[in-house]
Length: 211
Image (cartoon, one colour):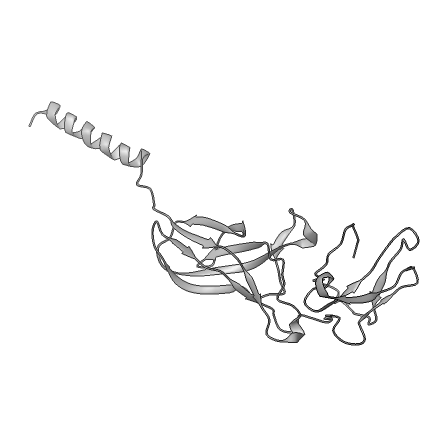
């Protein structure tokens, strides 16, 4: 075999090797979808199953894939048996820029099989951690945990029916004659020095108000 022929074969082999480097074979993704999330209540002492879990923090085998707003479908470059983990995500104080894992709930874990090109739909069900709540008020008892402050010039009433949520609700009306309303809990709660407190509330209003 001549040197010329050897050189041609070497150039051809180098060309195909270079093509593999420039155009490597692409991985075929699997897909994970979440249509909805739910909250499961273990007892009346955990309040309502109503929630505002807006996001899921998605992990595969402990590796963060991303933070996704529900509903979503995302590609994952994995196949075969894996552990899928969802952590409940909230917009802290309602802000889009302050998305975080809600520390009051457990994550949702499932061991499953991912298949290339196929969509695996999982709808997580989150549960509260023990001893989460210091105060729960559903306005069903005769007495309630809230009272007006000295700064308030309107009163608290209880309503049911279409203006209420899951039974009875607290109702407050503000107008020109009664422009100020402020209420507080009848109990005093102490927050640990390095602790955090979250307020979960279902509300309906036709104007802005603060907590």
